[in-house]
Each structure stands twice: as structure tokens, then as C-alpha cells.
Length: 328
Ligand code: PBG
Image (cartoon, rainbow, N blue to C red):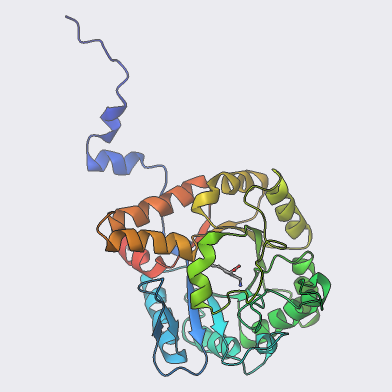
């Protein structure tokens, strides 16, 4: 009997580790990972986040340590979130020159600002007592245009403190243009904007709201973040508008449940595309692994490879330092 069948044997290229490594089409590199970090005002010790094992609300000191560790591991960037001691309706701490986020940015930039890129999330939800991402109308809606002024002030304040990239995440219409104009007017025309252009109203942000203490006190974010089942084309429209307004890079968030969207965005634009592997994605893998139901390390790498393969140039992930160390 002739040994002609089958002629095509895909297994030939999978047989050894060296072969698999050589033909690998998707590689991860530490420089494309961005680590989100939380810093809280007025705490003496880092505060563990229950729903995100291994993630902390940092003190200014422990934040510096985490930033150093990330830089040493070769992580490409950090994105900082501040949790102020006092919140109010307009989110005053967001543009307080002595606020926790401003202090933390200055600390981290002084320490590691040459080794990696220090970014700031620009939004109001961590700073408002009602937990919404903007200023409220008397009727309790988020007032788009009143919020833009607050975002512009917060962004300028972050840039003055040393932030190297402004990342607006609030999903207000016109936020990129408002921030770009304010940055330029204050002499920060060289500071890029990484726009959270495509941001879905997602259940996967649950653990983040514990970490940033920003759960809405009433209602939800459905009137400003995108609907998972929303019109096809909405994501690309948001991206186009942000690019027209001057965004230097765009983001898709969450990652794993929106890989189709990520791929479409990747194919539509000529700027770097980031994807945010959000808190709920982190918590799911950690929780399943803690129960012995999943191989933690393999699940982490597989999810990151999937996000990369779908088209992300940069990935925001709470595992950035750990994974970067492994890749080194
Ligand atoms: C808004 C913001 C959120 C996240 C990043 N920026 C929360 C929200 O929109 O409710 C979520 C990130 C995550 O879940 O890891 N400032």
C-alpha cells in the first residue's frame, strides 16, 4: 500500500517545540504591555482588592515600587488611576494640582519616566461622589458639554504633573477635541492622546469599580458607553470621530469579548491600536485558577496571544509585569 495519503500533514509543523517556535505567527513582547495601577490618597498600607487577587490600591510609596518593578521587567507603559480621599459632585480632585493623581504621576515620572511611558486615565468617575463619568444635570443625566470642560481641565492638570500620554475614557462626544485644544493652549501640543474610542457598557468592569471606588451610586453607564448589541458600525464611527479630533492612538475595551471589533478597528486605521484586558477578564481567570479549574499561566498567555492576534499593538493588562518577566 502506498504511503501517499495524506499528503498534506499540518502536524509536521507542530511536532517539536523548536518547529512551533520558528513558525509562530504571533509573538508577545514586554514593550507592548501596559500596566494599570491604582493609587489611593491617605492610606498607610497598600490595600488588596478583593475581586482582583494580586492587585492593590497603592500608597504613593508602594506605587513607586510597582512602577520600578514594571520598568525593570521591560513593560512598555503604565496607566495610572487615582482614588481621592474626598469626592464631590464635580470631581474637583481630578484637576487639583495637589491631588493624588497629580502627586503620583510626578513621583512615577521622576522615577521611571525615561524607562517606560507614564499615562493617565482621564475621566471623572473616580473623583465624583455619584460615581458617574461626568457632571450631572438636575435630572440626573450626564451633561456632555459641561463634562468636556472638566475633562479638559483634568487633562491639562495631569500633563502639568508630568503625564506623558492622556487617555480619555469617559465616552463623552467631543472629548478628544476638547482635550486636544486645552493641551495645545497650555503648551502640551507634544503630548499624545490615546483615546478609549470603543468602550462598551460592560459587566466586565465590575472589579475595577471596587479598585477605583467608582461604582455609580444610581443608574448605570448605558447612556454614554456603547451597547454590546449596538449598531454594527458604531465602533468604527467612534474611532473615525476620535481620529478626526486628533487622537494619536485608539483603544478597544473590553478585549476578549470584542475581538471581532478589535480586528475591524485594526483594519480601518493607521494609528496604534490598544486593547484593554479589563478587570473582569482578570478576575475570571484568577478565580477559576484559584479553584483549580483552569491552568492559570496558560490561560493568561492564551488570552494575551488572542488579543494580539486580533490586532492589538498594545495590551493593557493587570498581568503586565508578571508576563513581561516571563517573556524576558
Ligand atoms: C473609567 C474607566 C473604567 C475602566 C477604565 N476606565 C470603568 C468604567 O467605565 O466603569 C475599567 C477598567 C477595568 O475594568 O479594568 N474611568
